[in-house]
Length: 206
Image (cartoon, rainbow, N blue to C red):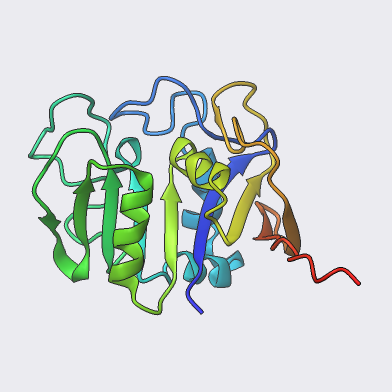
């Protein structure tokens, strides 16, 4: 059965991105690249988790995850990942300004969605077929889907340092019930998996 999953790296205090993000500092100057050293410098410790991120057949992300620019599009910008992004699948970017689809090498096409996060998820589900859809981030986009109860499996990759301020997972998300599914620790990160709790349907009263 197709699932909506989400992977996001966070600090101990659940910060997924710092303030003052820019081209030079995609996650803010305080956070830097520390949230992702487990993935890029110590990938041998987490092969299954990294493979799980790339298993989805369609992705949804916010505009701020796609690029550093605000306002009008810089059409020369094609994302952080170079000519062949790692997704190899359709990616639906939430934004307020239209842009033509951006076809990249390796099977990734960025589609720019201006009619809301639910419409983006609908399009991603259609593109994925029976495969999973991944909410790729950032934290504000993920929180919108969590608050709407649309994430089936949340995978938090917790890196052992604190930030003290920034954009946190679960900000503004109320009354979310999830069930712990697994936990695994390496010297650089703890991988926590939670699944959405399904509400029991009341049966007939005797």
